[in-house]
Length: 126
Length: 135
Image 1 (cartoon, one colour):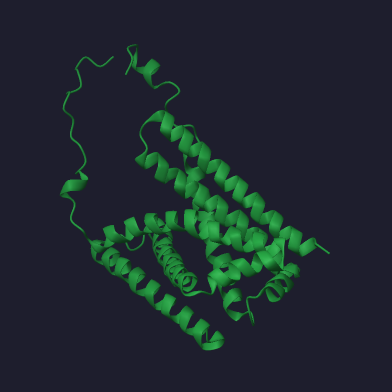
Image 2 (cartoon, rainbow over the protein chains, first blue to last red):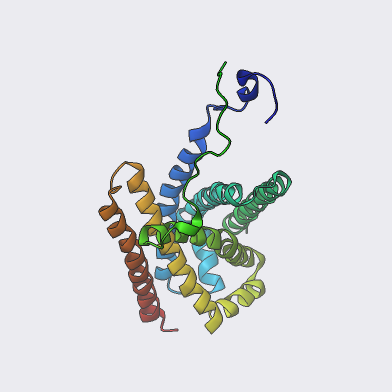
């Protein structure tokens, strides 16, 4: 803690008026995941087989490709938020924490983009 | 400004060392453990599956052979349980967010129910898989 007046020390450290945003997005994506992952697991269980031809034919249908894209968005955003809290709780050194959060963001964004691209390639491919 | 100095030794929350293992504590830790297991385990396997399907039959065959082998099946059963455990404790979180089930007795019962529910859902899912596919 530096010196200075009380107001000077807390200025800029108070509520940023966005504290509930993280919490709320975690809940919205939780409900999204609940619906989309039950659909996903149900689909995998009920598909006649899980070989290449069956899976690709399934993902070519808009009724499968669209929920898959939504699932990718919801799941990757949800775990990005969750792991962020995990990192903030256990990594206390500022530099390590920053690097971990940076790596998490890159991992989530790269993963989501690769997954979405794969779905689109199957769904829109010739 | 405040004329009195703040005391140097301030009261702290109970530390990890004096906590007792309780079911509602276990469910909380499991929620975090299963979430991270999926973020770094299931997500990677999901990416492998999707990218293999987008790449072509031979790339998919590599994934398929591993996934349907005994080790792949073991991981599959494990991740099914991990998902259902996270789902059940996640639903518990959503319920508790509304202010319900916060009493110690209800909280404990609900926590136990997440463990029982996750195991039952895993058994049910794999019973259907084994019955319909007969791996």
